[in-house]
Length: 99
Image 1 (tube, helix red, strand yellow):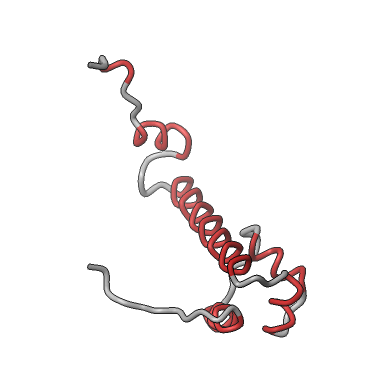
Image 2 (tube, helix red, strand yellow):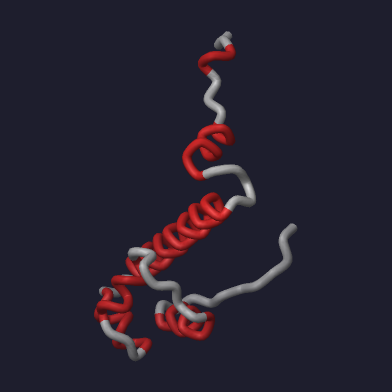
């Protein structure tokens, strides 16, 4: 059995790194993490659809640089653009209650 010293406290590490829950610095870090997570989802979906950045850009009427910025989490698409991106990749967006 492991002793207490070897237990890693993720909550304490997050607080040390980004500040306490509810703080501006913690909120900024959480927002950035969500942006990077969503960017990775878009990147994976595009690759799974077998599309290049240029092909996806052409399908939604954007430029390749815009797709690149989305996939790096530097730009957050509007809701309407997200729907166009999903449709261009043959996907749908579903909103449903948690449960």
